Length: 284
Ligand code: KIV
Image 1 (cartoon, helix red, strand yellow):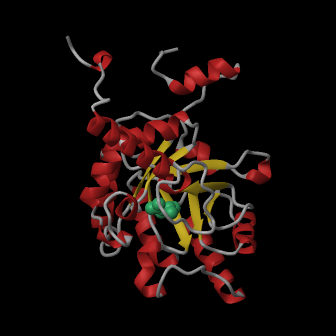
Image 2 (cartoon, rainbow, N blue to C red):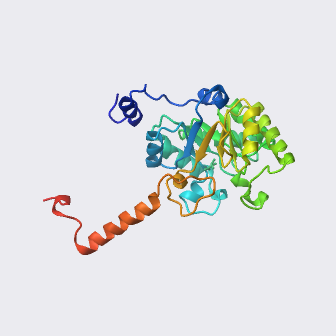
């Protein structure tokens, strides 16, 4: 066991066998109805975030296009490019996590031509992703097929798809009526037929999350989609309490934003009072 391998160290201390790297085939068959524990996915956008996520034992790390809101200061995800996503994917992959790294395909990187879609997917794989994610249902199925034919595993994303914010007229819970739920289920089935190895369900009623989960043979990973999905995903900055406000579906497991402000204020006070640096923090 390498002393720099946090997951192996954790396994040794708990007496369990070492954690294995998550693979696409391992995820594809992972259904809670087969007595499997729910999959855990979290976003990360850089090496320190990925190291913490992996040490925390997640199964998948999503380099989400939500880097736009959570790191780059934009109001929506429509501003990031394939170059931005490759840059952040590479930073995450350099931490060499055991978790499967999923690179998010940004808006307009998979909407026009299959050849462009494959080139853009390949950019994320070359940056270190093991799979890519894209938003949308049946209309995107040809692009999923093109990626899969090029050996690029694809995770789907249905429901409240943030890249559709203008078309949806805001960030609104989707599939609230029977017709919407049926459309969503048809989209999920089409994505599975096209070759998706898992599907994120975002911002849908719990009953819809449960219905899709029951009806398809690849895992659903929910965010604001209730407890019946085959896994859950949260944005790292939300669950760590680094964003001032978080949506209803987020559980804040820490308040690192407040802790960081207190630490920085204490440092500023120490510099101003002369308490920092002390003799032990100085080269003599
Ligand atoms: O970019 C992202 O963070 C996502 C998750 C919300 C699933 O797509």
